[in-house]
Figure 1 (tube, rainbow, N blue to C red):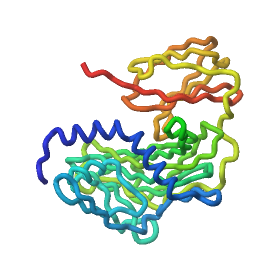
Figure 2: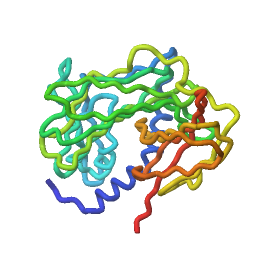
Figure 3: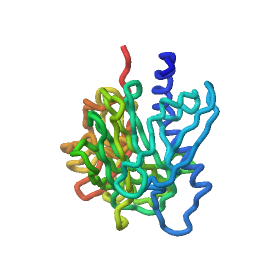
Figure 4: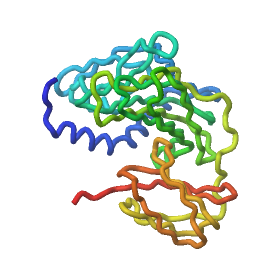
Length: 316
């Protein structure tokens, strides 16, 4: 494998973090300008991974050609495209499928021990769940995260407003395929106009043959009519500082015995806290890595207010 300058991986990792939010917004807006569903629908494209296509991009170091499942992408391969490093795109087609002829294999190696898979598509329904089948390969030394995100583009604020999230962790379990299911929690009464599904595999000791195979992905039957929490009524809160590092302070007209949930953008709930009475509370951020989160404050009656929270850890 060709040696690459150390700055390549550093730049790629840093910019990936900075552009992920904006990239998703741009892709969502572009998608919605091309695909406007005439009826209520939320169809995950190519969830069986039967259809694949060659994609070629002219990178800085030369042309890059990859074989991708149609309608699916990889964030980890974004800068591989731009820089011309096709050996950093850890996504392969495999005939080791749950059903049909093919499945998607997130296949990292020792140099790049992570891989991801992303789909962005139009959606104007509120599915109750998302699921499919997965299988760990090789030494089964890693873990995987599945995240589902529903949003609605706000043209005035030029941002994607969160509507619903869901997420789960996949762990090795036997040699064959295992089913998984993600329950979707709606944090807004809005009907979404777009959605994304992201699957991330990570391993600190990945070797050739390690990875994760996914197949037959789909949304669960039925559509949630009511949000998990109704719109807020009569209360609000502020967060300070934001961005934060070690703790945040919630201030405002909070409900009695308010419940606080902090979730990642992939929908995985990381903290659940029940506050005491009062309108001023300090919440530690212990264990939260740097990144963007959603923080929701809800009452026992089911009302909820949601805001964005940025966590940053200074380098000394």
